[in-house]
Image (tube, rainbow, N blue to C red):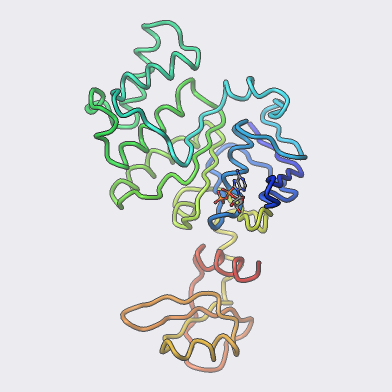
Length: 289
Ligand code: ADP
């Protein structure tokens, strides 16, 4: 099971270069695509999902040429878009049944079984007869996953799924997502570093339409071991520190500004060594691109 993207480029009519020569090979499991807003993630996801075309380059999934055989790809695709429009006046059960019908599950009994199993899987069975407009953000996201899973897709694309979820809902959604990668290629597009470090076995960082890093989250973190230092400072000292050190991030901690600095050797001053996190690696990449 393999998704291969080669030299994909896309420039929108307004001149924005949303994808520039993107190449990625993605196998079974959870793959995190991390990047800031506007980096090009949705453009890439939508192109893989056959919703828009690239200007050049190719995408193959298990031998299917995605641009040339979109129908074939769609049969094996589950897609949860960033904004999943729900129909306010129907129940979860009705809408799932309708989508299953459109996806080719014509036989009534089979459709009922499929819908029931999916509602159980995403823990919405008890709310199956409730109208979707009464669902919370987390319930809507889980419904989105249920519809994406109709037909047992081998390729699942989830675009910024945890934005707007409260911590409990996010946790429940994480548990659901992490099951999916066992049998499919799952691509999770997000600007939330925690999503990737919690869930993904492999990742890429995309910035300004280009792939700027690929690897395993742990390896990406480890590459910074022994190179990070932190120190609490006063806010007004920041410009000085930025002049004298390579400051990759700053955050407020217990009323003080805590800065993280990248250095090959222990910097002079009051610094403490810091264990690297994926967030540090992400900030380092962003500071360089
Ligand atoms: P992300 O999903 O990482 O936030 P997008 O793929 O949505 O990034 O956007 C990448 C860039 O392309 C942004 O600069 C965005 O403004 C631009 N863009 C996205 N869609 C369109 C469009 N339909 N027409 C013109 N520009 C677009």
